[in-house]
Length: 299
Image (cartoon, rainbow, N blue to C red; front, side, top):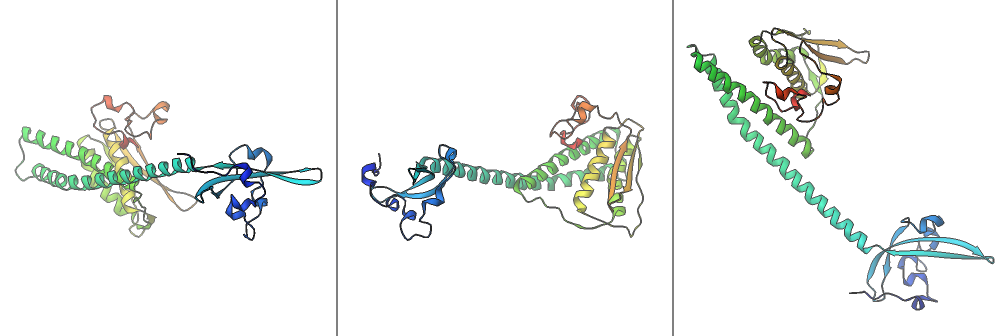
């Protein structure tokens, strides 16, 4: 249905405020000077949005842009009006769609986070029980030992995936935060050693960690620092050569920070693989080997 609009002859002789109320007389912004733009912009989309009045008194969003010229010593102003009702409707629909997608994304992140926590609780119990069986006073038989090792290997792999899901959910929901606190590198290194050393011994890999003074501290997020170190050390052992070595090196920079590096005797990466290093779920060819992983743990 076409809405009633003013015809040209109906506006002739009337104030411009009849069509654009804010340009009416007495209005603080009632000057057409406010809408004069460069001549080449009038044909484009440049302009200012105002409220226009239809013939029936209803209001419609308009875009207005004007240019001026002098002819015969008189100034003439030409204004171009565009009805932007359709554009506003499209923008509104797009914003609604974006808001809906955002809500759906947050709901997905909340679900992933909840599911990850629910899965991790029984999994920790399974891993703990398997460890008890492994270190029992009555040594397991060879068949039992093989089964326990399979439980532990699969359990740790599953725990890796769950932790990645939780990290991903936190990042997507915008709840991922970094805290700044005084952290003892000595304590963090000892905790990492306790977790990584058993795996290194099984493969005959030598693990060399630096020593720190007990009263030495750094400002960092303790949880994230430990997680990064564990990931690097775990991969250094996991993708190392048998009877290889892993060394953690710490150097103090000129800016007062500490740079931590992990060096191992593995096969290394080619320049082509280095270019793909931070691609999610890309194992850089390791999927052809026997080691399990998602690809993101190579980062």
